[in-house]
Every structure is written in C-alpha cells, then in structure tokens.
Length: 157
Image 1 (tube, rainbow, N blue to C red):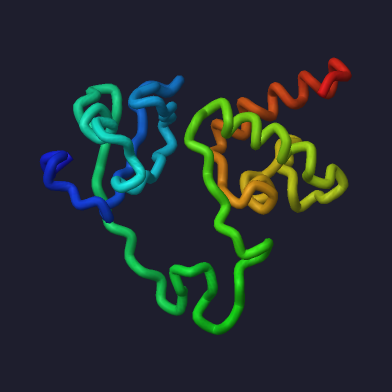
Image 2 (tube, one colour; image 1 turned 90 degrees about the horizontal axis):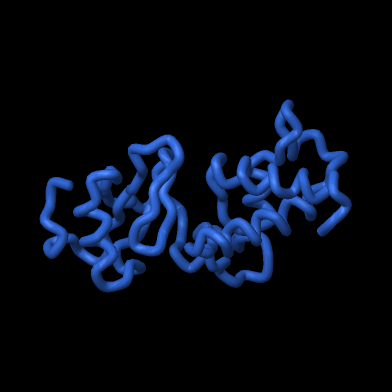
C-alpha cells in the first residue's frame, strides 16, 4: 500500500486479494485471488493493520466514484426504488455465514431457468446475487455448489 495505514480515511476503500491459489485467512476473513472490496470504516480496530502487514495478501486503496443519477439512499434519483422491500441487504463477512446463505440461495434458483445456470450446470453468480442481494465470488459459488450437489446426490438437505 502506498499510504501508511494510520492515514487512510474512514470513507476510503481497500481491495484485498490473496497471492496463494487456495486463498488465505487473515483478520477473521478469507481472501481468494479474486479481489474483495472493503470499506475502511467497516473494519474492526487493528484489522486494516493486520491486512496491510500480511505478505500473503495484496492490499490496495481506492476511491469509489459516485455514479451519476444514483442516490445513496437506494433510489436512482428518478423515483425508481431498488427491488425488494427497500431494506438494504446486509452482506455477511463470515465465510461460514456466506457459504450457508449461498447454499440456501442455490436451492431457490429455478432449475428450469436456463439463463440462471452456466453451461457446466453451476448457478450463475448473477442469479445468486438476485436471490441474496449481494454477489458471491465465483470461488465461493463453486465451493458451495460442490457441497450442494453432494447433498442432492446423497438425498440430504
């Protein structure tokens, strides 16, 4: 990181990814090679320092540019509200909670909807996002789908 950790503003974002192909765990989080974007203000005390000091992770700061026409309250500035009940979806950060949510979401996707599934039979991350309200990584989807498929073949749920 180009900045020292103590000078990073709370409204700043960090992008974190692991060097290792199998991922890496630090500060209570699991990181893969697919970057995860975290708001500095959402991190617990000491987590940013632990992430930045970890040689097995790549940590970069960046700023989110405002999107023209979007209102931070959830509407688009034209009176159109997001789908759902208007409540913001809380994105789980605990890997087990994320996996459990993804597992449940897979079961909610219509198996006959060809647009929701990849050519290899896995649910598209976009289809999972529509159910969850947040987009899982491809690696998360693949890992959980393997478990879901084993459960289906074994007859358990």
